[in-house]
Image (tube, rainbow, N blue to C red; front, side, top):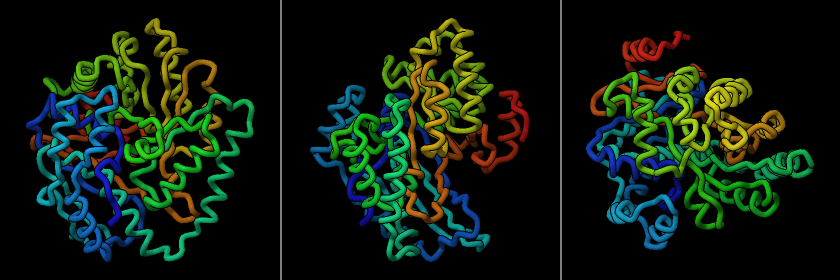
Length: 392
């Protein structure tokens, strides 16, 4: 059994789920899986994936897990009560070979958002671990430890990086649960001053770390269907979030319709209300420069705001970004695959994205076009038109 706890997921799943419970309890959604790597045949592992999903659906939250969630200042008691009754249901998820017979598999999650939102992260972790267990019979953990040690040294041995803090964002694409746990333990032990915490709620609880995360793309995508008007859906999503958390969890995701559209909506009110923004596509240096200037244009001091970088980071890029922006804003980094799946093997680039909400197509228009995911091209074109985005 790969997943042993429903807490073995990212914090933003719970923060979004609480908003769904309170604001959108009747929303119906659909997610689809995609592996972006070419020439990866996942079909032989379908039965094992199904078995692991069945095991995942047998899990319930333990009392100590619910107590931990209750201890988080932004988690409300009625949500914890709901989680005490919660269980994932197999009827909402299917796994099958692609009709194209090209080695790809189709994983589709379809049902109430409130009851399906917790599938994504553990399912992606399951696919990763099954694949690497089957293809790497003797994992080179020695190589992984050497790589991890060298990465940490880039920060811990450079006096200019005393304030550089990184976080683990690597649950979805980790090599295995075992390796993920070892990475967390090493980071906590060997670079405590520079290790900010983890997005993984289970490891945060077990290792006494700060759980990190706010919102993901699916939340803003769903608001395309749930909001009053498509052009205002990004504003609507941010306003609903602020109403739920009253100033807490104040990091806005900036790339659901491209950065230009984000800045157009992220006015003086939001600049003052939110603690900062998260970068997840496009050139991070350009993004940081433009966001800092945007704060200044809106009469907000950027030195008090947080720039969170989380797009395919490695430690060299972290160092360069920190040195560029450290004296002008607060800077934070979430590192995923490069932390939890760097043993010398090519990692899987797997995602599971929302493609429909209440029967309507939803999409993101990333500043990195390869990250776009929607099964309705006409809707994508309409979204580009509404947000005045040039086709790429």
